[in-house]
Length: 203
View: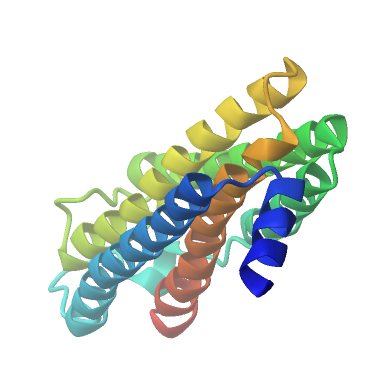
């Protein structure tokens, strides 16, 4: 009786047994990816902290770095907008989901624009390149690794946004969009660590 009730509930939500298995496998896969990526970031963070203050020449973090407040606000706000997008799609509001996804994309673009402007300033005005000193090497490696993950997430969110506005996205795809949001939340969480290590402790 319980099995029959559960089966009926799954059918009401449009989820067959194979669909549920695929969804479960996708969740496990995303968790595995996040754990692997977290381990990679941990290596870079430890390397940055280990080499902190060991540069034999300038410039130093205190001389050239400032806390990127606007970019941080935008990136952390994008976690809210992507969560609202997932929620809207789950309720069948595809247009609203598309609007929130577009907001997420724009916030991510602002963050990347800030990172780009910072790098241009560091290279052209302060003379800090990846080969200048140990600080430059570890800084660009860690911040660049995070930026590359933001770009990957931005591409995925942009595609989903296009699907939403072209009406190719359906409430049945909510599971997939949610998994992308998991990745995006991870990217935002990593930024908090990078911000703390590079722009707070590192200075």
